[in-house]
Image (cartoon, rainbow, N blue to C red):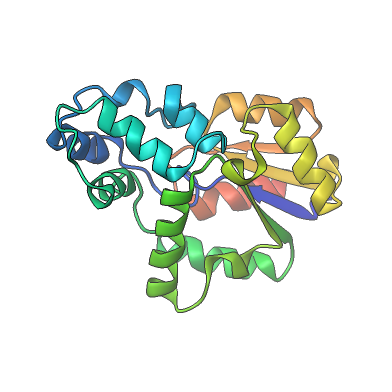
Length: 208
């Protein structure tokens, strides 16, 4: 019986727009930001940023180092990065509120402080309350210094939540993350970004 739901954020709760942010970085003199930005597994200094190994300031300095324009501002970098993220859709917000009445909801996300701050601010502007109010706990890679698909982050999240993996549904759009969770006994749902959110979540809960 499912008691807990662990949601990925980017790609599941929040739609991603990779090309839009790549275009923005190109306008800042960075032609190959795609080498670092991968919807499923970041690389290089971006991976270190999401793992909490470097600060936001250090990340911005790394961006300036690979740009043809060393004078780009922090705000320009942040804005370009945040274009990767669309607002959380209203039907997903409504379903999370509904699910919260029956299940213990958690966020388990590879994320960074720039994007996470942006999502929280945008969510509160759109819905009038804080994003964190939907969840018992928000497990973010940059705060935990560990990232999916490492087993460590799943085990740490379970420990803090006091949850049993066999009673926990994990929803993610990355096959590697799903494989890691399944290996630890999670009930899993590989999310398809091309299909409706509510339909996939309800089916996963029914099958679990």
